[in-house]
Length: 162
Length: 190
Image 1 (spheres, rainbow over the protein chains, first blue to last red):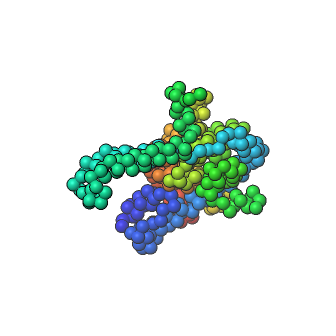
Image 2 (cartoon, rainbow over the protein chains, first blue to last red; image 1 turned 180 degrees about the vertical axis):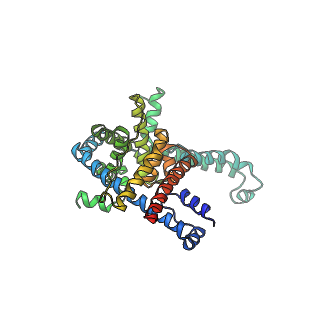
Image 3 (tube, rainbow over the protein chains, first blue to last red; image 1 turned 90 degrees about the vertical axis):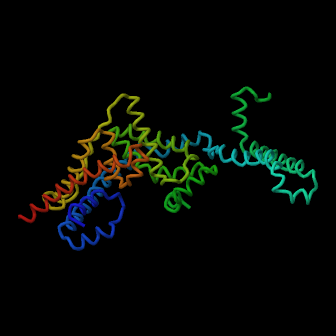
């Protein structure tokens, strides 16, 4: 690695990123690049120490003087608790799989002919019924776990029963 | 367990989990742990203690409201700084004020010593690099040099592309390396 490439690599380094093998080998053989790397590293550590010492002390004093923690906690106690996100997509995918199965599974008669052998010719209807029951149970579970969202959805559209 | 013990012993994720389970008081752990960082950012933007305190309160109330949307894909501190950054930018826009950075850095060390000189030069180089940029981009440099954040984290907070941030930080480091290089040469000559 050449000097210019080594210095460029040093200047491109991300925060908290270690030196690569090629750079380490170069620094081990090149005292001037190694000294430059050490100087910048030391300067940045010193800079962070200086600014943090002054700023954190200042920030903590502001937090204490203004009783920010008390004010924040007083505000959040009056607010409704944060709710887990309503991940409709996670629920819609399995529902779509069940619904589509109800229509398409019986069409694959030849592939699942063994079911006919086991349950007789009426199996297609039975399968639809089973999947229908599954879909209903799934929908009921969805409504039960998202009562607030369902209620707000119905209220927005004026469909909420009185 | 005292509140201080709780603050030390509980990770951010544990505290967030407790808040989401209905333990509102656990939110104070996060306020105590990250309050200074948010206030410090507020001071960078507003240069006024009272405004910085109001800003910190505002940021934490927003964070509480949006806590369920924190999925742990980034650190909580990065997520919180993104809220703080957006809040600060919006507050400035609302007040039609320009964001100006004027970091005043307290230099530690015996005046006249090599160490103090090094620290002064570093602060000057960082300040110089920041002064060359529009204020919002200058904050990228501050986030890198002061908060020790990665390019990807800065991009997540500010919305600037990683390559833009990288090139600003690169230039700042180049300036710093050149200045420190000249200090080294001066010393060798002496």
